[in-house]
Length: 258
Image (cartoon, rainbow, N blue to C red):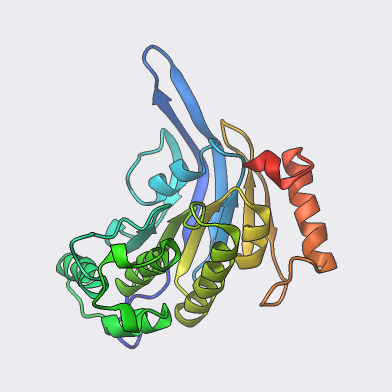
């Protein structure tokens, strides 16, 4: 599906009563237990819960890397889905521009369509225009992760899956990257599923937050976030929302989620 400019239209994602388990050698390990939620087109949905509860597994399922035991999954074709991981996974022997170019060439071959914007557009949005000819080793961790996000948006996916993309960064750098991510999301309105175990991060970015339990994961609550951007975490509404999320998870401080 494309929009009037020839690029992809943001698509929605819907999970209904999804169950998934793994064979651990003699018995089944239940990971997802009747997980149901929807991410409408152009939404930014954070999936939040304790470490090891099945959040990343959910992304792999949506991305077509795993198959559910049961339930209904409504997602775009895998060729319309992009990924951002915890590390940048840039090719170290290629420049930033070449990293984006390789990703786009591969995607264009699969999708058989032209892209709306040139590579330079996404590097500029990332604040990396002056670094286009640099190799990844010449960049800081934060800049490398920005480049990975630029690469993901540059293939112009209908849905973008992000698996704790800022977890390896220090908090000051992560805050800057969240600001960049929100700006590029606001401009392109790709549907985003964003995994995190950080309530503050989820509230800062998301249009809604899916709070999931310990494994086997089930949805505790799907919370709309109606706060205006840019969001201040010291405001009363954000503080109350954070307390509510922590209460749902039965914890009293952020460290307990790490």
